[in-house]
Structure formats: C-alpha cells, structure tokens
Length: 358
Image (tube, rainbow, N blue to C red; front, side, top):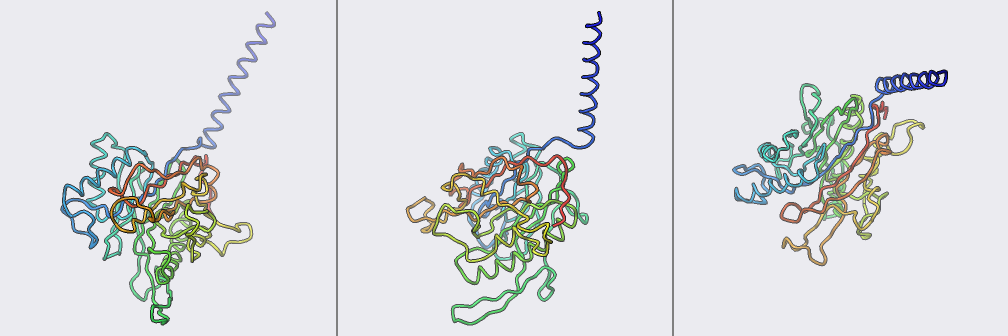
C-alpha cells in the first residue's frame, strides 16, 4: 500500500511539473516557426490587355496569360510563405496571378503591389504572401523616392564615360518595395530590390553603388528603426565576393553586396561585422550557385557560351542565420518562363522577435 501511494504521488508531481513547464514555455516564448522565402525575377510579367512597359516580352494575350500561369505553377510547387516577384509590370499582373492561385485552391495567398518609378521598363517589385501586411503610415507596401535635387532618397555618383570624361549625376532607387509582416510575434521587414544591371559596365556599377546607399538608409530608417528584422532579397545584379560563384571568371568590381550586408558601418564595436548574411553560402555545391541565364544569342536555348551566374540574392539578418535550414535554386523553369530561376531559403525563425539595434 505504501509503495502504491509513493507511485501515485510521484505521478501526480510529474504531471504538475509538466503542466507548469508547458505553461511557462508558452507564456515566455512561442516555438520556432518554419518560413520559406523566395525571390524570383519573372522577366517582364505582363497581364493581357495591358501596356505598362516599353519592353514587351509577349505581345499577345494568350502568351501573356500562359506566362502568368507558369509563374503560378512555380508558386504552387514551391509553396512559399513570402515571395518577392521582380519585373512585374502592373497590378493586373499580380491580380491575375492571385486569381489563378485561388482557382488552384491556394486561397491563402494575397498580393502586394506598388508602382515603381521606372518609366522605361515599367518593372515593379511585388510580393505574394501568406501573411497580411502590417500597415505602415496606413500603407501595406511602400517605396521611397524623392525628386531631383532632394537628396532624402537620392545619392550622388560619378563615372568616366567613353570619351574619358568624368560625369556626375544623382541616382534614385527606382525599382524596390518594402513589406512589413508579423509572423506570430516576429516582426520582419522585407526590402525587395532590383538594382541596375550589368556588373561589367563602369556607369552601371557607379549607379548601382549609389542605389545601394539609398537601400541602406531604407533598411536603417524604415525597417530597423521601426522594430523589424531586415531581410533583403531580389535581383541585385552583382556578385558576392564572400560566396564563390559557379563561374570563377565572374567577380565583382564593386562593394555593392558587401555594403548591403554591412548596412550600418556606424555601429559600435559590439556590433562589428556584417549585419546581413547571404543565404547562398548555404548552397553547398558551388556548381549550383547560379540564378540567371544570360542567353547570349537570344535564341531561347541553352547554348555553349551562355553565361550562368548568381546575381539574385537573399540576405537575412544575422539573428536569423542560425535558423537557416536549407537554401537552393529551383530549376523547374526554362527560358519560356524567365531567364532567372527562383532562389529559395527555408528558415526556422527564433522563438521570439529579436530587438535589432543595428
């Protein structure tokens, strides 16, 4: 009888301890949250019966709808939680995309679109997300632009032209958007970027470097200062010197990626080093580190001599880097869909939001 009482007492004490432990854990922190983030340059995604870009990839309604159908197939396959879509040309493009996803039964997705200031290509940076955007200044998605002469969201730059003349100009960050979301209690600020192309051209490199200075200000003032953890993703059109590319002949002539990763060079000694981490370092096989296909002869076929490099990137704050489970490039598309492939990272978010001071 005594032994029976001891066993029951021990069982009761164990149950009480377990309940207290569970309540304490749930009160103090939520469990890690899995999150899949994708960046995809869709190469001129245009809805039927729209005319929002001077760069028309598909002229006819049937071809344009088929293009959007293929992008919807990518989303259906990858099932991202948040996806940055680059080279979207209009709101009707993403509206049709969401309509197709709903027809597939994927009604958890919503689209966020804002017009860029690129009046030539008309390319915008949009987001598709399972999470509702946080309203910042009453807006679900924003971008930042100031007119000529107002340097709030502009940056001076200089380059030497083909006549060996020094030219001075000022740049605006014309293709970007910022989305703030809260995942459980974790606040994430995503900066979708599409920087100036051509990492081998002096003018382009100078302008892209200026664009990055504006991006750094956005990260600090509009993401970190609002209490959100920054994630930068998109087509950065440059190489990361810290992450070997598939093509060893390709190397950066700028500090663009380095400056993005180290967005706060005024940080104190306790915050020394890069604030952002490139998820590409977690693609173990160097031969897999390429996200773009430069079709040199534009015949829509992979030929010998075509260039394959990694110019699309996802940079996550160092507080999230321990949670990187996997990074990879999805190869399920061909040149009919895009000359880029989707870049994917799977994260386990920390159990709590981390206070970001830099």
